[in-house]
Length: 365
Image (cartoon, rainbow, N blue to C red):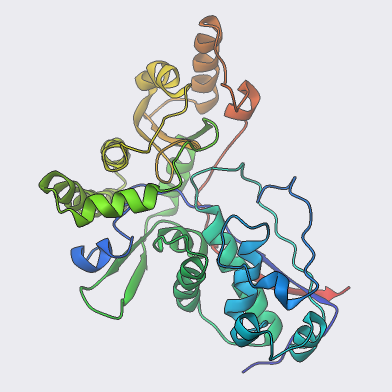
């Protein structure tokens, strides 16, 4: 147990977003156990003054549910107080027990429905801050599991690819053995610095609009898996194989293969969620002009919107490609769509993060 951070001192955490290049859905329980494989800034502040206001932390649709669940999971607000309202009479007493009042501020520079794992990564960052404040030791590996615990507490389900992507730096792959309890293994893929620079120069990010996913997407995919239809099982195994191939291609600096795997990955994601997945209206037109310039593409996350991720072919200037595609789409009378204008589509850039989650203790306020 370390020392608590002095009252009135800020703790800062920052973490990158996650782009999934291959293997999505295979980290989702219970699929993982069988396969053995590898905020909106305009939302106003929420103020909680009583234990009663924290009781609904298991409902992900409630404003502030993510923060509430993190406060409970971290131990700052004990779970017995949530269930019986007897351990602490007031919120003030609960926070005094933990060392004093608490102000949490979270920011995300990504739009809603980005497909980049924002919620899970925010949970990991919040937990890291709360543990630091309380002087509780932790490792990045601890945060991977505890983020999953919070998501289960909120009844949102999910796996671990998002927090792996946001906590660890660079390219990484995660695997587990066929055993209980799950023993997650994560490896940062070692690549030369010059390859990272090349990848950055050929990585294209385009915002296609808010994700269009039915609320029961996760349940639908799991139900399809539970039915053990041969084509669904084959798709899952192909996702695993493609993840391995993508890892090998990254180690070899083979971006052409990474692009091919990326496109196959998107096709498999579309198949698994075909009953609930609706593509952004602008996608087909965008790809008709972009296809000439790219090795492959996918929509980040579940694949129903958010950011399009593409790997450019070699010897192309990213700015010139963007200009040509924008001009072609403008001639056809379409830039953007019902939920995203032309500027919002293109004003994005991305690079490989080399730090991962960073936590710093600031000076007293």
